[in-house]
Image (cartoon, rainbow, N blue to C red):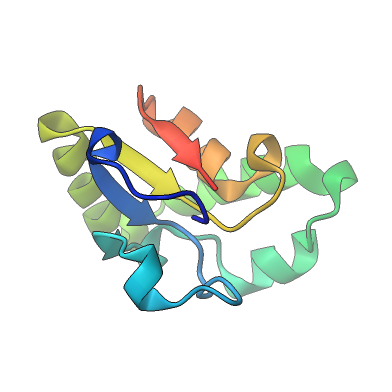
Amino acid sequence: MYEDTSSRNGKRMLVDRLWPRGMRKERARPDEWLRDMTPSADLRHWHHHDQERFAEFRDRYIGELEDADHRPAVQHLRDLAAHDKVTLLTATKDLGRSEAAVLAQWLGAAGTASR
């Protein structure tokens, strides 16, 4: 999220539920903010970036992504990825253990997660 934009990023999709602290919308310029793809508030609060809970967080998040409420958002993201490169944006410091990484892996995305 904090890296400079580049045309090589393709579509820049913010996948955090909350807007990143200290980031002005004019600077960030995501193409879309996909709040419907983010973990629920209950799951985010339970996980609270506790890395010992990450494996269970991942499983619970994937369960949320597979429910009927997420189908339209998931399909929208898959459609975008089928036609353009997609970069998932997050403000999380630990990209490897973030919802963006889980989402990218779950989607089978060839794209990247970017902070």
